[in-house]
Image (cartoon, rainbow, N blue to C red):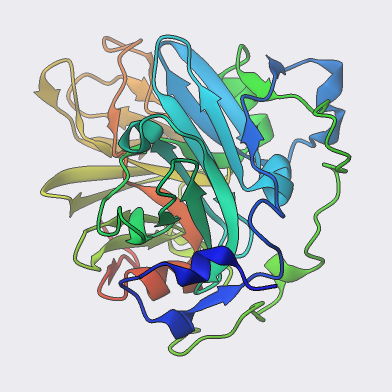
Length: 336
């Protein structure tokens, strides 16, 4: 049966939009699922090494495990006193992006069953029902075509690392009544394989195609990306700091190998610019000597309790996917 969304007018070639083998909502998105504390019994589906998408909003930490994303791809959630969010994870492109649903009037997002370069295409549950391309960060089909969807900063890292930084985090419960086994990755050895589920022209295989990267996109198809392997090569005692420029200003990227995660920030806090370096396995700023951790919080020193501003548009994805969506990106390969 033809996917009804294929009738929409799109700004990308129709031949590049393919069926993922399921109809709309064949992969069911979640609507305001229950969140529980980090020690709750229903989280027995989570292992320390599993990855989560972490959020920090209004003084509260939240975690959406990849394990849930494997089966649902979109978690629509409302933050008390905050925005209506769609936390999205595409298993085929390894991409985790969190969106503010205000652009669709707070309507929830669903899984269309269609893919673009292996990446998730979402639809909004409004009367008009446009299609939103996850890694393009906007609509490309329907009446909203050309409309960007604002992002909210999120971290992609190991569960044990997020839990250690945020012991009070709230996590999507494993008791969802959906009949899914959240301990089982449904794509076999996909993450370890160099094969893609749907081949397309121009795949960049100059690095392992499923290597994770942190990218900061620009709207013209450019930006800068930081391959995890390159960040690992320059680490000292498991962490590294990279200075660069992105989205019109200075940025600093923190990498922590124990968390297997990276994030980009504006290098300033408490009204002053900061210069970071690694000393004795810790990230410290030269100006005050304060110690910082991966999520941008100062944990010791004069600035303890201050937070760096994360770049909301920065996100983690597989190498091949980032290169397919942002082919003009500059690749950071060491130094800085």
